[in-house]
Image (cartoon, rainbow, N blue to C red; front, side, top):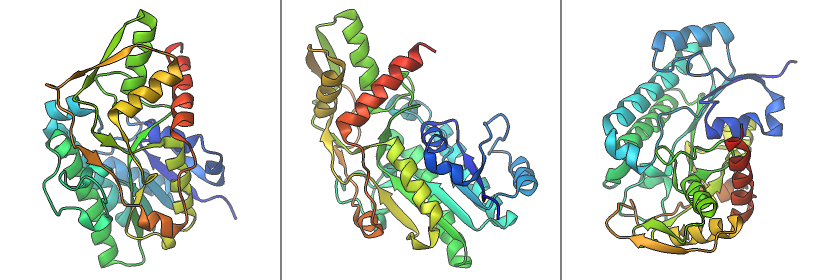
Length: 310
């Protein structure tokens, strides 16, 4: 009996690349088309691709992503593109007779006012964070599509993992597109190069964020694929603890060796004050991320240095 065929959407993104470089991926015959090889917004092209290659399982990691600046500038694009992609992937899998779909969502789908204890049953119970509302709505629609598909056909293993914020190898370090940790790595490295005496932090730095090394998410995805029946319809994935923005700057500065001071710009947006997942379902599943924050940041910085030279 041959290896099962697995399609990974978004294989060139950070999550996809970490999944493709995980040792466990060798258990599958891998399909990892680029966006030019397969445009997920083209419903017919996707249907043809699925009919031609006949994957037995799909990991949906594709999406239009960006940081606060990008989300504030182009909310329509983030909502429309991610909704269209999610709709095409879910209905395409149904039409192609694919029984397993591991859909990756985002912790930004939770109401802004909750702050902590974000359990899976709290989705759509309050107002979303305005700085990424379009992206969040697109992710909520895709998660609901998976749930509705299972409601109509319980034999389908269409399950959603909701990871906390991520960082790691193959991250985006361009300040125009990066999230918090890679942005801090880039900023502190540039300050180190320039021998700058200070670095600006948006806000007062007390906002708290939960981050997980992307290699750990790849491990969780592969475990989910090995036994999708054991998963609930949706499940948070993360360490279940958070740190302040100031903490992340301090840890990155320690890894890089920069010894300057931090200056807070209180006029800049910072998003939600806290966003900490409830990982009770993950704990019941018997899994937790293995990479310490300092170790993950060190590995990410080493990748950043090599990536700049290639």
